[in-house]
Image (cartoon, rainbow, N blue to C red; front, side, top):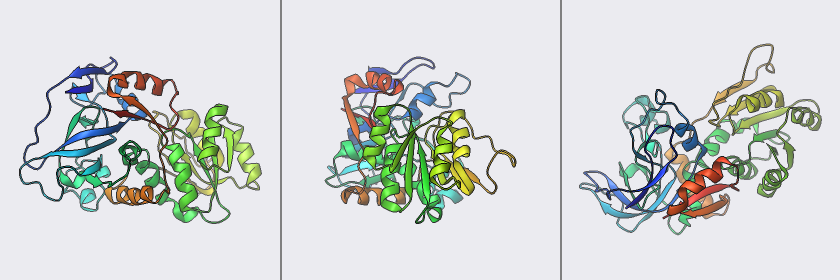
Length: 340
């Protein structure tokens, strides 16, 4: 079968012919129907040989949708032909965090398809356990695949700070790309907050407005002054940084108000420099990693109701390497999805 694999540290991914996997006991074989691309893949492929933590070669793709093709011995609860997406946080299942349903925070080390195990950028993929499958019914798999990360990650980040997003509040979304454009939609559905989106370029700002942002601003230092002017000097109640570089971390702290929250989501390798004298008093700064399977179930229900919709650009499997190039160059409007 065809698969897009990362084969050597420092090299671009390759389209290769590999053996079709066979499910072992407890495993499920999926015929892949869609696989979303993510900047996290780029981050991992930018690691040096000393930093790179996963086996090679590795099939990429941690936003899978597929149809159940074959069941390993002992698998129950799913049938051949079921249309599913895959919860990507594969924890040990027994530590305190996994017992709480937070496999994304597994204490023994969470792995994922495409990030430690062979992923979905192929014609077929193996899923380790039926608990990681989420039925999607008649949802379009191209739209549903990225619910597993592009929607789940901002959904968890927003749920953490919902008590602050009350009437009269303001929320800033830095970066209206793959995750940010979904965050704007979720903020509009879940809260009465005023949504201010920050990004670079007229096209991206227009996209953010189309997704529901009340106000759009260039993601530059002076945006913080504009936000404070529009909030009577208070600053934003919550700021979500979906980029994660030093410049956006600094901008997030400049935008947030006293007692507000900054949630760092983007994996750009930067930081938010916090000290008593440089951050607003009593501001809370936190990170947020992916989400829980229960929250993915909630998102599937929301998608069925039309409350969240991921904007996608599709590529055939043969063009996956070009899709990564387009992602790197900022050409993707929403989420790139590979369709085998």
